Structure formats: C-alpha cells, structure tokens
Amino acid sequence: MNPKASLIVGILCISFSPIFVKLAGGSPITSGFYRIFIAWLCLLPYCLVKGNLKIARKDLIVALLGGVVFALDIAVWNLSLTKISATVSTLIANLAPVWVGLITYFIFKKAAGRLFWIGTCVAITGMVILVGYQHLFALELNAGILLALLASLFYAIYIVITRGILQNISTVTFMFYNMLAGSVFLFVINLFLHNQMVDFSLSTWLCFLGMGILCQLAGWLTINHSLRFLESTKVSIALLSQTVIAGFLAIFLLNETLELNEIIGSAIVLAGIAVTFLRPKKFSTTVN
Image 1 (spheres, rainbow, N blue to C red):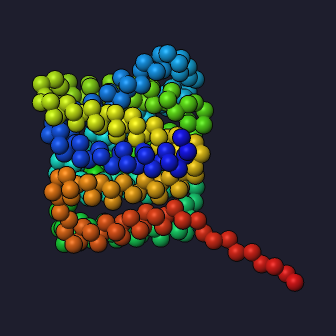
Image 2: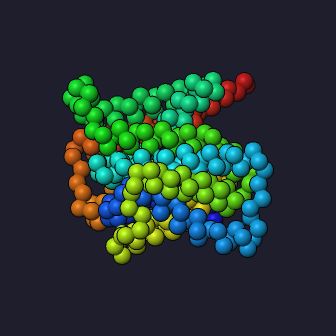
C-alpha cells in the first residue's frame, strides 16, 4: 500500500477506538486486553505460516517491554474514557509528542529546539483552558483528565523505547511479540482485579472484535507501515487528526457535546503540538 494511503487508513481505524470502548460498557482493563489479544490471535496464523518469528535477543527484549508499556497506555486511557468525553480523552492522549521531547531533552540531553518549547508552552496553555483555570488553581483536576495525561506519558515512553526497532525487524514480527507481551500483562492484571472476562453480551463481544481487528490490527499495521517510508514528524502531525475524527464520531454515535472552553482549549493544544513538529526555516546568504 502507498505509505500516505496506509497512514490515512490507519488514522481512520484508530479513531474508532474510543467509540468502541464507550459502547462496550465492560471493564476498561478487560477491553484493553481483548483489543490486543484478538489482534494477536489474528496475526498468529500468518506469523506461523510465514515464519516471521525470528528476532535478535536485544530486539525481543525491547519489543516485549514496549508491549507492556503499550498495554499500560491502553488500560489507563480506557479508564479515562469512563470519566471524560471521548474527544477530550483522545486529545489529551495526543500530548505524547510533547512528553517525547521532554524525555529526550532531560534524559538524553538532546536539545529540542526553539519551536519545540514554543509549541509546548502553547499546548500547556490550551490544557489550562481545557481543564479550567479555576479548577487548576484549586487542584480540582478531573480524574479522567489525570488518567488521560498518564496515558499520554506511557505512550511517549513506548515511542522512546521502541524507536528504531522497526528498522531492524519487520512490522509484523515486532507487533507479534509486542502484542503478546501486552496481552499477557493485561490478562494478569484482570485476574488480579477479578474482572469479568467471559460473560458478555453479543454487542460487547462485537465491540471487542472491532477494537482488536479494526483499531489494533488494521490501525497499527498500516500506521507502522507508513513509518517505514514517511518522516516520523509528518506521521505524528497527521495522527493528531484522529482527535477531530473521534470527536465527530462521538457526536454522531455517542451524542456527546463539548463545552466552549473544551473546544477552544482543544484547538490551542492541537496548535501547540503541531508547532513542536515544525522545522525552522533555513536562510542562506548569497555573496555577489
């Protein structure tokens, strides 16, 4: 598939994720487990037939660790969806690029550049407006917003620790081990919490299938495929559009509405994130 077309398909697929979680109505952790596990089950026969299971030990460790972090991201984000709107939760989760820049700067001592810090300030301003400054100053942050922020941090860590691995192994091989680790981790968490794992209605099972096949398998296979050919900055900017798509889907499918401060704050946050990925113009001088 053409990389740009692959990216568009992936964005459309993952935009349905908050809708499925809301409609499923089950435990958020259970929804996260079935999303990853069903996708892994669908990938298993292909990997066995094609023999896409060979991987170096170092890459295996990174893929498994990344799977656990990704599972944490999905679980915490799903929890946030039970407390705030799908649009706001998806938007806050998109703060992950800002976290990546901060981690890169403070841990790896790599300068992020002026545009990054400008974008970060703009995004934080948008967050203050979205949350409501009166609640922020009174330390009355909604639990759903805090969970969505934590999910964005987990996703940023996932991006950092898995950076470059797709240049060493195939997308399918990476996703096989990545989703295997995520499935096992969430299964253990569900057992520990004594969550219901089997007795669900048909509509809930259909939502689980939708999350696993459409959002996880189709969505991330196509997005990871596009990352092999397109610049990561362009892909990151494009992924921000899932917030807009998820918002429209939530309005039509979940009858959700947004307050004025959420709309304004959302627009400012998106603008801030976009600025962090702009490239500074290079000026050249010519001597006559």
